[in-house]
Image 1 (cartoon, one colour):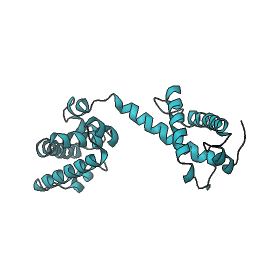
Image 2: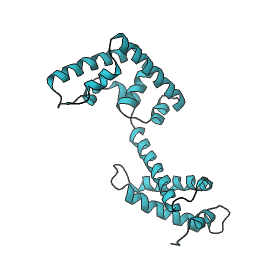
Image 3: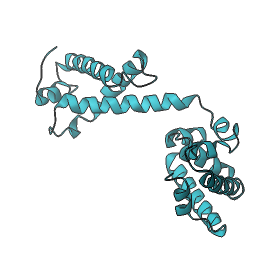
Image 4: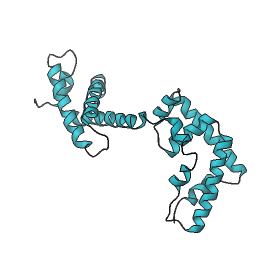
Amino acid sequence: MTERTNDQWVSELAESSPKFNLALEDLRFLLLKGLSAGLRKWRGVNKEILEDAAQEALVKIISRLDTFRGNCRFTTWALKIGVNTALSELRHRRWSDVSLDELTESKGMGFMTESMSSRSYSPEKQTIQNMIMDTLKRLMETELTERQRKAMIAVRFHGMPLAEVARQMGSNQNSLYKLLHDARLRLKNAMSKENLSANEVIASFSGS
C-alpha cells in the first residue's frame, strides 16, 4: 500500500483525481484493519458489519474532505468517522428487532423497580424505594399519554436510541424531543402534588 501525507490523501481522494480508485481502496483497507482491531471486543461485531461500516464511512469521508483541517493524521480522522459509523450501525441493529410495544408493555411497569433498586440497600431504604417507585409507576400510568409513557420508558429506562424510538413511533427526533419534554413537565407537576421531588427520588436510589 502506498504511504501518503495528509495533502496526498486529500488530493488523491478527490473524485477527479486519476489516483482516486487506488487511494479509495487503500483507505478501505486501512478502515477495515482499524475497525477490526478497535471493535474486536464489541458484542455483535462481525465481518458484515465491518464491511458495511467501512463502505458507509468511505462515502462520508469523501463528502467531508473539505472539512479536514490537517491538525491530525488524515487516517486518524478517517478512522474516527469509521468508528462512529460502525457504532451507529451496531446500535441500530441491536434495537431494530426490538418492538417498542413489547418493550413497554410485556413486563408492565415492574421492570422499573428492578432497574433502579439494589439488594445492597438496607431494608428501610428498600421500603422507601418501593413506595417512591409505586408512586412513579402510578403517575406515569395515569398522568402521561400512551405515547409519552412509551417514549419515556424506552428512552429513559431502557436506553433505546431516540432515532429508533422515533422510527417506531412514526415520528422524527424533533417531535420526540418535545414529547419527552412535555412528559417530564407533566410528571414533575404530578410529583409536586404528591409532595415528591426529583431530588428525593435521586437521593433514595443513591448511597447505601
